[in-house]
Image 1 (tube, rainbow, N blue to C red):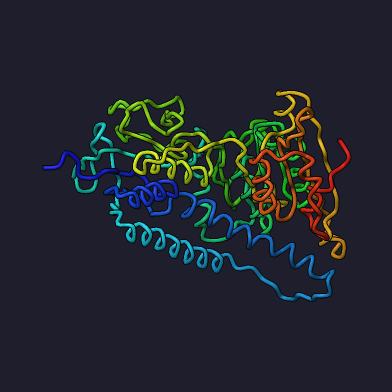
Image 2: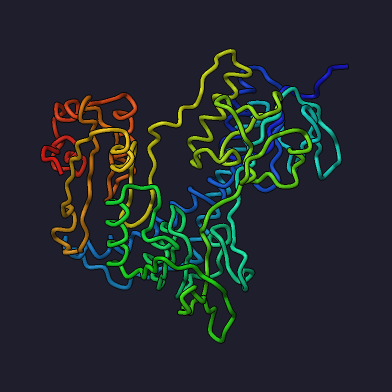
Length: 450
């Protein structure tokens, strides 16, 4: 009788877990994956993918506005929330089916239901009570949105519920100004809602370059989003005609929906991890080394449940590295330095590398910057501007960071990220011929130091 039922048991069928399972299977491992909600995880089911679809929908309002300056007459355009959500749901169902098909094609067994860790090599399936012995266990359970402990919290929603609202709110108050809060504020505003964004800090998007943060907030306010800084929502009450969100300064706002986007917490509660000897940090995240191994040698963890870098492509790379290292005899470590990232706000943000302040803390730097009106709006007259910024090490002339705010910033930063990852210098950018007329050409024509 074999010592183990499977070589690998993955708890969590999100992007990272699915990648790890698939790659491990291609290396010859016998693999099972347990998922208690829907295969695809947060990103595919109720995160980046459906969010981006809603973002696309929200930007048509600006496209219609711009079209007038180019000779187009658009009359009678109407938006229908129910149609958007139904089409979004259909696409998400297609993607989930594709994820399942990929696992099945690679001979990975899918277990629909919650799985708990019994010990270093045993997983218990909650639905059936069956126990599975695994040589290795991979925890890839992701995280969940946090709601504050305030009166009326049960009246609020998180990003999870925002994707399934029965109708588009006329008025919405959102607390939290990180990626999720800013993106939802912009998309709801683009679809016609009156949006109030509340943030406890003195500027939105903590962790981003200071000029980026300021530029985006000013643009958001110009688009009619009311940004309230240095405040929290203290309580929520149900009133005639909606909800009343009371702020810490005593003021209040009436809305149809109150949403919190104040952070996410790792999904490790009541999983049996600590009893099995797995060390968790103070946030409940699984503590791991560079190889994603926990304090128990046979148990690994990847993605948001480790609270390292909460980005889907990072979780995918961590899962791939784990599978290659443990099952493929080809060890490598997922490097978290110079990871490109984007905020699908309006205008869009794309960044890679160090902020100006982070770079200054390391030594002398040069900063190159430009701000200009995009060509697309010169005929429409829409008020918006693009910000592009490059941070360069003064001694080596290596590009340490690139920051873009404007249309297609994410597309540009993906390619700029290759150059930064390779260690490109300012001269490398200067020696590249500009592609005219484009926004991206500004990256290779920056000459004046800020």
